[in-house]
Length: 217
Image 1: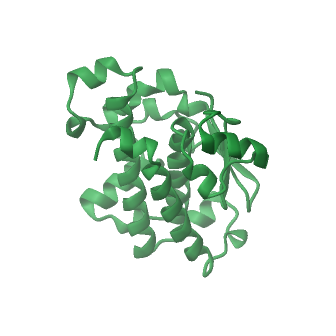
Image 2: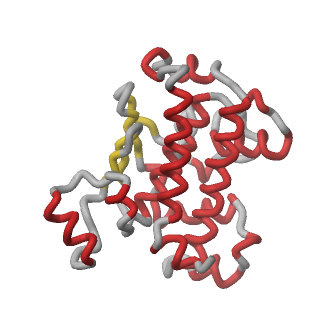
């Protein structure tokens, strides 16, 4: 698949929507309203959540790779490496232009504001190493993926990783798929302009069933 098609046709948004719907199915049995603290959500673990964490992490990995290879702001990375050879260490170099550590997401059901690209101690993702404690969703994703540590696939990590994926979508949000899934909080007359191609940008905010997110890009 061409990189342009991946973003222009909104496949990254399709993937997010499917993942969020699967997490919502989990909430039918474990309502988020009853687990409103980080510690409570860390104790909720299952193979279903492990599968969801693996799929979310994989889509974050795909997004970063395709973003680096297609965005004009990443010439050093895109010229030095092939898409398949890019790693998390390379992705951290995007912080300078994306400022992901400053971006936040509000969980609608609990009214919490979270920062998916920081750990629970407030350390930003560019400063988190593999030797740090397992308090960052990306490390837990890798531990589940490579070492089968299913116990790290807890509800908190899944929420944080999905919120991180949503922030990435905010970076590449110029797709009619946002209208299809009703993620844009804008008047109907502006939606018509977006669909017709007469307006490429909307308010820099996305609202889904679970989250409200915005990012400065």
